Image 1 (cartoon, rainbow, N blue to C red):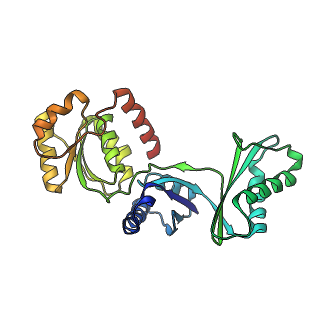
Image 2 (cartoon, rainbow, N blue to C red):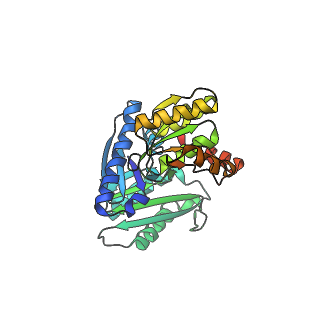
Image 3 (spheres, rainbow, N blue to C red):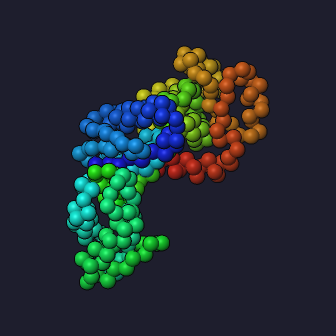
Length: 296
């Protein structure tokens, strides 16, 4: 089972939050449908739970979904003190080598006969007692092994790490845009607008095609990709035609500071976005490398 966390959308008003959570669930399922994998979803306040046969493959898919801040492979047990202890000790045994330092991170939601601090303290003591021959030490600042215990009502989830997601808002909750991808700056600009919930129709020039095919399309199974003809006039015409056909709310261009003012004049009343306008080429390359790693 995967425990999926989302951040920003949880701050919305209840009606908006329900809409955004519904979009997030649809987007997660779309990733599985594209890969031909089965999955089941359920939720509580602030979390989604994904059941899948291959947790590693499922993690790679979920981490590409906008709105997801992180995902963990979890082990589920009833919120009973003894069952939590027994399962945690069994899971911790192969992860705690001799001489290791560790920390138990406990969180609790709901009514229980223990506090988060008491649970973490007691479980830490249980680990020291069970593995006394390994000379383990508790280090709450920089442990070599972290053991996470999340008690949520009648169920408890045990896990050992988190995989970051892209964050932001779910695809489809904002407007529709068209983006020119002719290199890392264009690809990063498209990604940044997708992260704000926009559906983006991609127009790829030759240098941008691998970035679209190998990275951007992995974040949106429904993304459309048009090929742009050579030359600046052909690119502008293709963008305008696609924007009209898609009824797009605006166009995303890979512009630097010195190009932005001129471009605004050329494009007239059409809404123009350039999310990377304040970034140097070095900053663009560094951010794009992180995006490519996230795409996996």
